[in-house]
Amino acid sequence: MIRFTRRTLIAALAAVLPLAAAQAQDIKERSFKFALQNPKGHPLEQGAVKFSELVAAKSGGKMKVNVFPGGALGGDAANVSALQGGTIEFVMLNSGILASQVKDFEVYDFPFMFANAKEADAVVDGPFGQKLHAKLQEKGIVGLAYTELGFRNITNSKRPIAVVDDIAGL
Image (cartoon, rainbow, N blue to C red; front, side, top):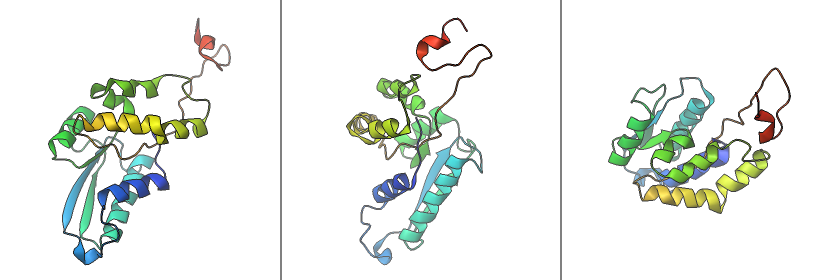
Protein backbone atom coordinates (compact mmCIF):
# COMPACT_ATOMS: atom_id res chain seq x y z
CA MET A 1 0.00 0.00 0.00
CA ILE A 2 1.57 3.26 -1.06
CA ARG A 3 0.05 6.69 -0.36
CA PHE A 4 1.68 10.08 -0.93
CA THR A 5 -0.32 13.17 -0.01
CA ARG A 6 0.24 16.73 1.15
CA ARG A 7 -0.15 15.47 4.72
CA THR A 8 2.62 12.95 4.02
CA LEU A 9 4.86 15.70 2.71
CA ILE A 10 4.20 17.80 5.80
CA ALA A 11 4.89 14.86 8.14
CA ALA A 12 8.10 14.01 6.31
CA LEU A 13 9.19 17.65 6.29
CA ALA A 14 8.60 17.87 10.03
CA ALA A 15 10.84 14.83 10.50
CA VAL A 16 13.59 16.37 8.37
CA LEU A 17 13.38 19.75 10.04
CA PRO A 18 12.94 19.03 13.75
CA LEU A 19 13.63 22.68 14.47
CA ALA A 20 10.95 23.92 12.08
CA ALA A 21 10.41 27.01 14.21
CA ALA A 22 14.10 27.96 13.96
CA GLN A 23 15.14 30.71 11.61
CA ALA A 24 16.60 29.56 8.27
CA GLN A 25 19.94 31.15 9.19
CA ASP A 26 20.17 28.76 12.18
CA ILE A 27 19.97 25.72 9.90
CA LYS A 28 23.26 24.16 8.88
CA GLU A 29 23.87 23.54 5.20
CA ARG A 30 23.19 19.92 4.40
CA SER A 31 22.61 17.73 1.38
CA PHE A 32 20.48 14.55 1.32
CA LYS A 33 20.03 11.70 -1.17
CA PHE A 34 16.51 10.51 -1.94
CA ALA A 35 16.39 7.26 -3.97
CA LEU A 36 13.44 5.64 -5.70
CA GLN A 37 12.90 3.14 -8.48
CA ASN A 38 10.16 5.05 -10.27
CA PRO A 39 11.19 6.96 -13.41
CA LYS A 40 11.28 10.72 -13.82
CA GLY A 41 7.73 12.01 -14.29
CA HIS A 42 6.10 9.21 -12.27
CA PRO A 43 3.71 10.51 -9.56
CA LEU A 44 5.98 9.26 -6.76
CA GLU A 45 8.99 10.95 -8.35
CA GLN A 46 6.95 14.14 -8.64
CA GLY A 47 6.12 13.85 -4.92
CA ALA A 48 9.80 13.42 -4.08
CA VAL A 49 10.64 16.51 -6.13
CA LYS A 50 7.92 18.48 -4.33
CA PHE A 51 9.33 17.28 -1.00
CA SER A 52 12.77 18.49 -2.12
CA GLU A 53 11.32 21.89 -3.01
CA LEU A 54 9.58 22.20 0.38
CA VAL A 55 12.75 21.30 2.29
CA ALA A 56 14.72 23.90 0.33
CA ALA A 57 12.07 26.57 0.88
CA LYS A 58 11.61 25.88 4.60
CA SER A 59 15.40 25.85 5.21
CA GLY A 60 16.13 28.98 3.20
CA GLY A 61 17.99 26.86 0.65
CA LYS A 62 20.42 25.49 3.22
CA MET A 63 19.04 21.96 3.06
CA LYS A 64 18.99 20.27 -0.32
CA VAL A 65 17.33 16.97 -1.12
CA ASN A 66 18.75 15.46 -4.31
CA VAL A 67 16.22 13.12 -5.91
CA PHE A 68 17.60 10.06 -7.75
CA PRO A 69 14.75 8.40 -9.69
CA GLY A 70 14.77 5.32 -11.90
CA GLY A 71 17.04 3.23 -9.71
CA ALA A 72 19.99 5.57 -10.31
CA LEU A 73 21.48 4.63 -6.92
CA GLY A 74 20.75 0.90 -7.26
CA GLY A 75 17.86 -1.46 -6.73
CA ASP A 76 15.52 -1.54 -3.74
CA ALA A 77 17.61 -3.97 -1.70
CA ALA A 78 20.77 -1.91 -2.26
CA ASN A 79 18.89 1.28 -1.36
CA VAL A 80 17.58 -0.21 1.89
CA SER A 81 21.12 -1.31 2.78
CA ALA A 82 22.49 2.15 1.93
CA LEU A 83 19.72 3.73 4.02
CA GLN A 84 20.70 1.56 6.97
CA GLY A 85 24.35 2.40 6.41
CA GLY A 86 23.69 6.13 6.21
CA THR A 87 24.87 6.73 2.64
CA ILE A 88 21.30 7.45 1.48
CA GLU A 89 18.98 9.46 3.74
CA PHE A 90 15.61 8.77 2.06
CA VAL A 91 14.11 5.97 0.00
CA MET A 92 10.60 5.57 -1.31
CA LEU A 93 9.67 1.98 -2.02
CA ASN A 94 6.89 -0.55 -1.97
CA SER A 95 6.07 -1.69 1.56
CA GLY A 96 6.55 -5.30 0.43
CA ILE A 97 10.29 -4.60 0.05
CA LEU A 98 10.41 -3.86 3.78
CA ALA A 99 9.20 -7.41 4.49
CA SER A 100 12.83 -8.49 4.14
CA GLN A 101 13.50 -6.33 7.22
CA VAL A 102 10.23 -6.75 9.12
CA LYS A 103 8.15 -9.71 7.96
CA ASP A 104 4.93 -8.05 9.16
CA PHE A 105 5.06 -5.65 6.20
CA GLU A 106 3.84 -8.54 4.00
CA VAL A 107 0.35 -7.84 5.35
CA TYR A 108 -0.05 -4.88 3.00
CA ASP A 109 0.29 -7.15 -0.04
CA PHE A 110 -2.67 -9.38 0.87
CA PRO A 111 -5.49 -9.07 -1.68
CA PHE A 112 -8.84 -7.71 -0.51
CA MET A 113 -7.20 -6.41 2.67
CA PHE A 114 -9.14 -3.13 2.70
CA ALA A 115 -12.69 -2.38 1.64
CA ASN A 116 -11.81 1.11 0.41
CA ALA A 117 -9.20 3.88 0.52
CA LYS A 118 -10.66 5.43 3.68
CA GLU A 119 -10.24 2.17 5.57
CA ALA A 120 -6.69 1.72 4.23
CA ASP A 121 -5.76 5.25 5.31
CA ALA A 122 -7.16 4.64 8.81
CA VAL A 123 -5.05 1.49 9.20
CA VAL A 124 -1.72 2.77 7.84
CA ASP A 125 -2.03 6.20 9.49
CA GLY A 126 -3.27 4.76 12.78
CA PRO A 127 -1.76 2.68 15.57
CA PHE A 128 -1.18 -0.36 13.34
CA GLY A 129 0.89 1.58 10.80
CA GLN A 130 2.80 3.29 13.62
CA LYS A 131 3.52 -0.11 15.19
CA LEU A 132 5.05 -1.34 11.93
CA HIS A 133 7.15 1.81 11.65
CA ALA A 134 8.41 1.22 15.21
CA LYS A 135 9.60 -2.25 14.18
CA LEU A 136 11.68 -0.68 11.40
CA GLN A 137 13.65 1.35 13.96
CA GLU A 138 15.12 -1.88 15.31
CA LYS A 139 16.56 -2.39 11.80
CA GLY A 140 18.08 1.09 11.55
CA ILE A 141 15.25 2.54 9.46
CA VAL A 142 12.91 5.37 10.45
CA GLY A 143 9.57 5.16 8.65
CA LEU A 144 8.24 8.63 7.94
CA ALA A 145 5.03 8.02 6.04
CA TYR A 146 3.12 5.73 3.73
CA THR A 147 2.54 6.71 0.13
CA GLU A 148 -0.16 5.49 -2.23
CA LEU A 149 -0.48 4.41 -5.84
CA GLY A 150 -4.08 3.27 -5.56
CA PHE A 151 -5.54 -0.20 -5.51
CA ARG A 152 -4.47 -2.96 -7.86
CA ASN A 153 -7.15 -4.56 -9.99
CA ILE A 154 -7.63 -8.10 -11.23
CA THR A 155 -9.47 -8.64 -14.49
CA ASN A 156 -10.40 -11.70 -16.51
CA SER A 157 -12.65 -12.70 -19.39
CA LYS A 158 -14.99 -15.02 -17.44
CA ARG A 159 -16.65 -13.21 -14.52
CA PRO A 160 -16.44 -10.25 -12.14
CA ILE A 161 -14.21 -10.57 -9.09
CA ALA A 162 -15.71 -9.07 -5.95
CA VAL A 163 -14.43 -11.43 -3.27
CA VAL A 164 -11.46 -13.78 -2.94
CA ASP A 165 -13.55 -16.86 -3.80
CA ASP A 166 -14.31 -15.36 -7.25
CA ILE A 167 -10.68 -16.05 -8.23
CA ALA A 168 -11.12 -19.83 -7.84
CA GLY A 169 -10.91 -21.67 -11.14
CA LEU A 170 -9.65 -18.78 -13.23
